[in-house]
Image 1 (cartoon, rainbow, N blue to C red):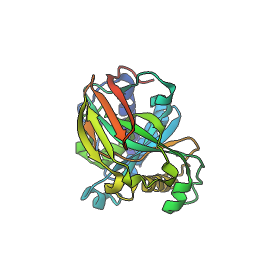
Image 2 (image 1 turned 90 degrees about the horizontal axis):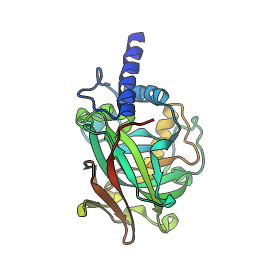
Image 3 (image 1 turned 60 degrees about the vertical axis):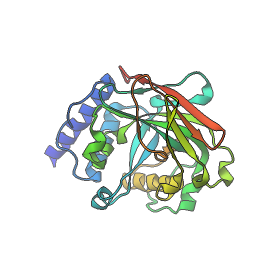
Image 4 (image 1 turned 120 degrees about the horizontal axis):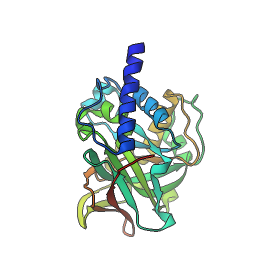
Length: 270
Protein backbone atom coordinates (compact mmCIF):
# COMPACT_ATOMS: atom_id res chain seq x y z
CA UNK A 1 0.00 0.00 0.00
CA UNK A 2 2.86 2.38 0.83
CA UNK A 3 4.55 1.64 -2.47
CA UNK A 4 1.32 2.25 -4.35
CA UNK A 5 0.86 5.57 -2.57
CA UNK A 6 4.39 6.64 -3.45
CA UNK A 7 3.88 5.61 -7.08
CA UNK A 8 0.62 7.56 -7.29
CA UNK A 9 2.27 10.66 -5.84
CA UNK A 10 5.11 10.44 -8.35
CA UNK A 11 2.61 10.23 -11.21
CA UNK A 12 0.67 13.20 -9.85
CA UNK A 13 3.86 15.22 -9.40
CA UNK A 14 5.01 14.46 -12.93
CA UNK A 15 1.78 15.78 -14.43
CA UNK A 16 1.71 18.85 -12.19
CA UNK A 17 5.31 19.78 -13.00
CA UNK A 18 4.76 19.26 -16.74
CA UNK A 19 1.66 21.45 -16.63
CA UNK A 20 3.47 24.16 -14.70
CA UNK A 21 6.30 24.19 -17.23
CA UNK A 22 3.97 23.82 -20.22
CA UNK A 23 6.04 20.91 -21.50
CA UNK A 24 4.95 17.62 -23.07
CA UNK A 25 5.39 14.10 -21.71
CA UNK A 26 6.40 11.32 -24.10
CA UNK A 27 4.80 8.56 -22.02
CA UNK A 28 2.54 8.09 -19.04
CA UNK A 29 4.79 8.71 -16.01
CA UNK A 30 4.41 5.31 -14.37
CA UNK A 31 1.99 2.39 -14.43
CA UNK A 32 -1.40 3.64 -15.69
CA UNK A 33 -4.28 3.37 -13.19
CA UNK A 34 -6.26 0.16 -13.56
CA UNK A 35 -9.50 1.64 -12.19
CA UNK A 36 -11.31 4.94 -11.86
CA UNK A 37 -10.89 4.73 -8.10
CA UNK A 38 -7.12 4.73 -8.50
CA UNK A 39 -7.35 7.46 -11.15
CA UNK A 40 -9.23 9.75 -8.75
CA UNK A 41 -6.69 9.02 -6.02
CA UNK A 42 -3.96 10.28 -8.36
CA UNK A 43 -6.15 13.23 -9.34
CA UNK A 44 -6.71 14.19 -5.69
CA UNK A 45 -2.97 14.09 -5.02
CA UNK A 46 -2.35 16.28 -8.07
CA UNK A 47 -4.97 18.81 -6.91
CA UNK A 48 -3.14 19.11 -3.61
CA UNK A 49 0.27 19.42 -5.25
CA UNK A 50 -0.88 22.04 -7.73
CA UNK A 51 -2.74 24.19 -5.24
CA UNK A 52 -5.25 26.86 -6.13
CA UNK A 53 -9.02 27.05 -5.85
CA UNK A 54 -11.12 24.53 -7.71
CA UNK A 55 -13.70 26.66 -9.52
CA UNK A 56 -15.60 23.75 -10.99
CA UNK A 57 -15.59 20.29 -12.52
CA UNK A 58 -15.52 19.13 -16.12
CA UNK A 59 -17.49 16.07 -17.18
CA UNK A 60 -16.51 13.71 -19.97
CA UNK A 61 -18.30 10.69 -21.37
CA UNK A 62 -17.02 7.12 -21.13
CA UNK A 63 -18.23 5.02 -24.04
CA UNK A 64 -18.67 1.23 -24.20
CA UNK A 65 -16.92 -1.11 -23.77
CA UNK A 66 -14.82 0.95 -21.32
CA UNK A 67 -17.95 2.09 -19.47
CA UNK A 68 -18.90 -1.54 -18.82
CA UNK A 69 -15.42 -2.45 -17.65
CA UNK A 70 -15.05 0.58 -15.37
CA UNK A 71 -18.63 0.68 -14.09
CA UNK A 72 -19.20 4.33 -15.06
CA UNK A 73 -20.32 6.21 -18.16
CA UNK A 74 -18.82 9.58 -17.17
CA UNK A 75 -15.61 10.93 -15.63
CA UNK A 76 -14.77 14.24 -13.97
CA UNK A 77 -11.78 16.52 -13.51
CA UNK A 78 -11.10 19.80 -11.68
CA UNK A 79 -11.26 23.24 -13.30
CA UNK A 80 -8.99 25.70 -11.49
CA UNK A 81 -10.01 29.31 -10.89
CA UNK A 82 -6.91 30.75 -12.57
CA UNK A 83 -7.82 28.86 -15.77
CA UNK A 84 -11.34 30.30 -16.03
CA UNK A 85 -12.00 33.30 -18.29
CA UNK A 86 -15.38 35.03 -18.11
CA UNK A 87 -16.13 36.79 -21.39
CA UNK A 88 -18.54 39.18 -19.67
CA UNK A 89 -15.43 41.15 -18.62
CA UNK A 90 -14.89 41.99 -22.30
CA UNK A 91 -11.76 41.78 -24.41
CA UNK A 92 -10.47 39.13 -26.75
CA UNK A 93 -10.17 35.71 -25.12
CA UNK A 94 -7.02 33.63 -25.51
CA UNK A 95 -7.10 30.09 -24.13
CA UNK A 96 -3.92 28.14 -23.52
CA UNK A 97 -2.95 24.62 -24.51
CA UNK A 98 0.23 22.67 -23.81
CA UNK A 99 2.46 22.70 -26.87
CA UNK A 100 3.37 19.18 -27.96
CA UNK A 101 0.67 17.63 -25.79
CA UNK A 102 -3.02 16.99 -26.35
CA UNK A 103 -5.11 20.01 -27.35
CA UNK A 104 -8.83 20.27 -28.13
CA UNK A 105 -11.80 22.58 -27.65
CA UNK A 106 -15.39 21.64 -26.86
CA UNK A 107 -18.72 23.47 -26.93
CA UNK A 108 -20.46 22.90 -23.60
CA UNK A 109 -23.33 24.06 -21.44
CA UNK A 110 -21.97 25.38 -18.15
CA UNK A 111 -24.16 24.98 -15.08
CA UNK A 112 -23.28 26.98 -11.96
CA UNK A 113 -23.86 25.58 -8.51
CA UNK A 114 -25.93 27.91 -6.34
CA UNK A 115 -26.40 25.64 -3.33
CA UNK A 116 -23.57 23.65 -1.80
CA UNK A 117 -23.95 19.91 -1.27
CA UNK A 118 -23.59 17.68 1.76
CA UNK A 119 -21.15 14.81 1.09
CA UNK A 120 -23.31 12.63 3.31
CA UNK A 121 -25.99 12.65 0.61
CA UNK A 122 -24.92 9.87 -1.75
CA UNK A 123 -27.80 9.69 -4.26
CA UNK A 124 -29.47 12.47 -6.23
CA UNK A 125 -32.49 12.70 -8.51
CA UNK A 126 -32.42 14.84 -11.64
CA UNK A 127 -34.86 17.26 -9.99
CA UNK A 128 -32.62 17.58 -6.96
CA UNK A 129 -29.59 18.15 -9.19
CA UNK A 130 -31.45 20.83 -11.14
CA UNK A 131 -32.36 22.60 -7.91
CA UNK A 132 -28.65 23.06 -7.15
CA UNK A 133 -28.12 25.25 -10.23
CA UNK A 134 -28.58 29.03 -10.26
CA UNK A 135 -27.21 29.84 -13.72
CA UNK A 136 -26.75 28.19 -17.11
CA UNK A 137 -24.16 29.73 -19.44
CA UNK A 138 -22.73 28.92 -22.84
CA UNK A 139 -19.10 27.92 -22.82
CA UNK A 140 -16.02 26.33 -24.32
CA UNK A 141 -13.90 23.85 -22.44
CA UNK A 142 -10.23 23.66 -23.33
CA UNK A 143 -8.99 20.09 -23.09
CA UNK A 144 -5.21 19.87 -22.92
CA UNK A 145 -2.68 17.59 -21.29
CA UNK A 146 1.10 17.22 -21.39
CA UNK A 147 0.43 13.69 -22.66
CA UNK A 148 -0.58 13.75 -26.34
CA UNK A 149 -1.95 10.19 -26.21
CA UNK A 150 -4.03 10.79 -23.05
CA UNK A 151 -7.39 9.95 -24.64
CA UNK A 152 -5.97 6.92 -26.45
CA UNK A 153 -4.88 5.29 -23.19
CA UNK A 154 -8.35 5.00 -21.70
CA UNK A 155 -10.70 6.92 -19.38
CA UNK A 156 -8.79 6.11 -16.18
CA UNK A 157 -5.66 7.74 -17.60
CA UNK A 158 -7.74 10.75 -18.68
CA UNK A 159 -9.26 11.10 -15.20
CA UNK A 160 -5.87 10.85 -13.52
CA UNK A 161 -4.62 14.04 -15.25
CA UNK A 162 -7.35 16.49 -14.22
CA UNK A 163 -9.76 14.86 -16.66
CA UNK A 164 -7.73 16.46 -19.47
CA UNK A 165 -8.95 19.97 -18.55
CA UNK A 166 -6.80 23.06 -19.05
CA UNK A 167 -9.29 25.90 -18.96
CA UNK A 168 -12.85 27.13 -19.25
CA UNK A 169 -14.29 30.00 -21.28
CA UNK A 170 -17.53 31.24 -19.72
CA UNK A 171 -19.99 33.00 -22.00
CA UNK A 172 -23.32 34.72 -21.55
CA UNK A 173 -26.22 33.25 -19.63
CA UNK A 174 -28.32 31.02 -21.86
CA UNK A 175 -31.55 32.76 -22.82
CA UNK A 176 -34.65 31.48 -20.99
CA UNK A 177 -32.79 28.51 -19.53
CA UNK A 178 -35.18 28.07 -16.60
CA UNK A 179 -38.08 27.21 -18.90
CA UNK A 180 -36.07 25.70 -21.74
CA UNK A 181 -35.46 22.06 -22.60
CA UNK A 182 -31.70 22.14 -23.12
CA UNK A 183 -31.95 19.12 -25.42
CA UNK A 184 -33.75 21.28 -27.98
CA UNK A 185 -30.97 23.88 -28.32
CA UNK A 186 -28.88 23.34 -31.47
CA UNK A 187 -25.14 23.75 -30.91
CA UNK A 188 -22.57 24.30 -33.66
CA UNK A 189 -18.78 24.50 -33.47
CA UNK A 190 -16.40 26.05 -35.98
CA UNK A 191 -12.62 26.22 -36.32
CA UNK A 192 -11.05 28.99 -38.38
CA UNK A 193 -14.44 29.88 -39.82
CA UNK A 194 -15.38 26.35 -40.92
CA UNK A 195 -18.15 24.47 -39.12
CA UNK A 196 -16.86 21.08 -37.94
CA UNK A 197 -19.57 19.95 -35.55
CA UNK A 198 -23.30 20.28 -34.92
CA UNK A 199 -25.49 18.44 -32.39
CA UNK A 200 -27.76 18.76 -29.36
CA UNK A 201 -27.51 17.35 -25.85
CA UNK A 202 -30.26 14.85 -26.71
CA UNK A 203 -27.45 12.43 -27.64
CA UNK A 204 -25.66 12.86 -24.29
CA UNK A 205 -26.96 10.22 -21.84
CA UNK A 206 -29.33 12.10 -19.48
CA UNK A 207 -28.06 15.50 -20.58
CA UNK A 208 -26.55 18.43 -18.67
CA UNK A 209 -28.73 17.91 -15.61
CA UNK A 210 -27.57 14.31 -15.46
CA UNK A 211 -23.99 15.57 -15.54
CA UNK A 212 -24.67 17.67 -12.44
CA UNK A 213 -26.20 14.66 -10.71
CA UNK A 214 -23.17 12.56 -11.66
CA UNK A 215 -20.72 15.10 -10.22
CA UNK A 216 -22.72 15.50 -6.99
CA UNK A 217 -22.72 11.74 -6.45
CA UNK A 218 -19.05 11.34 -7.42
CA UNK A 219 -17.96 14.12 -5.07
CA UNK A 220 -19.89 12.47 -2.23
CA UNK A 221 -18.02 9.22 -2.89
CA UNK A 222 -14.78 11.19 -2.68
CA UNK A 223 -15.85 12.92 0.54
CA UNK A 224 -16.10 16.30 -1.20
CA UNK A 225 -18.84 18.91 -1.44
CA UNK A 226 -19.87 21.01 -4.40
CA UNK A 227 -19.43 24.68 -3.50
CA UNK A 228 -21.64 27.64 -4.48
CA UNK A 229 -20.18 29.37 -7.50
CA UNK A 230 -18.52 26.27 -8.94
CA UNK A 231 -19.17 25.50 -12.60
CA UNK A 232 -20.06 22.11 -13.99
CA UNK A 233 -18.87 21.85 -17.60
CA UNK A 234 -21.37 19.24 -18.64
CA UNK A 235 -19.80 17.55 -21.67
CA UNK A 236 -18.82 18.09 -25.29
CA UNK A 237 -22.03 18.63 -27.25
CA UNK A 238 -20.59 18.57 -30.77
CA UNK A 239 -17.54 16.43 -30.04
CA UNK A 240 -13.92 16.79 -28.94
CA UNK A 241 -12.32 18.98 -31.62
CA UNK A 242 -8.50 18.94 -31.93
CA UNK A 243 -6.95 22.40 -32.18
CA UNK A 244 -3.55 23.90 -32.90
CA UNK A 245 -1.90 27.03 -31.61
CA UNK A 246 -3.21 30.04 -33.51
CA UNK A 247 -6.61 28.52 -34.31
CA UNK A 248 -9.73 30.59 -33.81
CA UNK A 249 -12.69 28.59 -32.52
CA UNK A 250 -16.32 29.57 -32.04
CA UNK A 251 -19.32 27.87 -30.47
CA UNK A 252 -22.86 28.89 -31.37
CA UNK A 253 -25.86 28.04 -29.17
CA UNK A 254 -29.27 28.44 -30.72
CA UNK A 255 -29.71 31.09 -33.38
CA UNK A 256 -28.12 34.10 -31.70
CA UNK A 257 -25.75 33.25 -28.84
CA UNK A 258 -22.08 32.56 -29.49
CA UNK A 259 -18.59 32.90 -28.08
CA UNK A 260 -15.09 32.24 -29.31
CA UNK A 261 -11.42 32.39 -28.53
CA UNK A 262 -7.93 32.10 -29.99
CA UNK A 263 -5.84 29.08 -29.04
CA UNK A 264 -2.50 30.12 -27.52
CA UNK A 265 0.63 28.32 -26.33
CA UNK A 266 1.06 27.83 -22.61
CA UNK A 267 4.62 28.46 -21.53
CA UNK A 268 3.93 28.54 -17.83
CA UNK A 269 1.01 27.70 -15.52
CA UNK A 270 1.30 29.14 -12.01
